[in-house]
Image 1: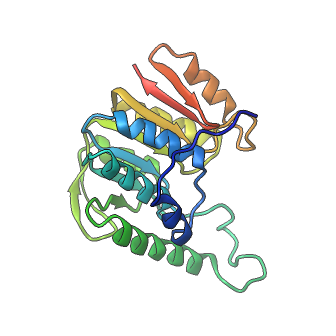
Image 2 (image 1 turned 180 degrees about the vertical axis):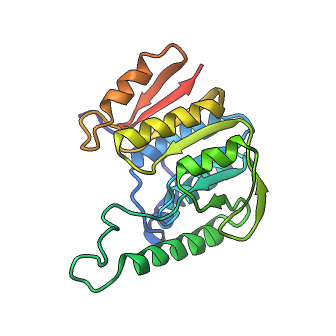
Image 3 (image 1 turned 90 degrees about the vertical axis):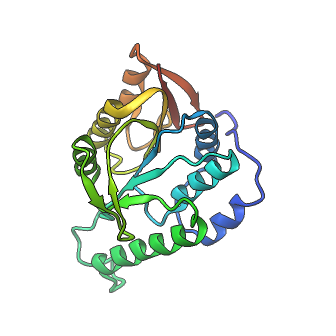
Length: 222
């Protein structure tokens, strides 16, 4: 397997020590590549967990002296949450959800105070419906924001099943401007989530080009 390209930065390890999350160094490199090249249109994140990737993207925007507005969508509903408890721990999924959400709020408020993302507590299908209608929405910080318009970059990291990721791609494609980027988490060749067919399908389209695999896929819209 080829070596993963990474970026060298003094702040990112400190962020990773304090902010829980599952974010590979390869994704950070791809985010940095895209953010350095995006227009001034907003960027979007589908799925936030405790805010690690959110804070990384906000930091990379500052690193490249950009002030793109960040939007994100998450309802903090996790796989296996149909069970009442986390195994035999006695901790309920409901309490775990609230803990993770409160961690997100605290993490982004601390690490990204100058560009705190507008995070809407909905699943991605609902978010895109609101976005397409230019709805006014309230975010998890109690701020009111009007949604809609072009997007310059989207990080897709929500429900990882092929069905949902394909729908997230199709919805993103409606608003992604030419020259914009899409990064798919857990999309590397042979990854257990099984996104390879979708990556092949997008690669063969005439309106997208594969920028890089590291090992996940970063595409640019033509």
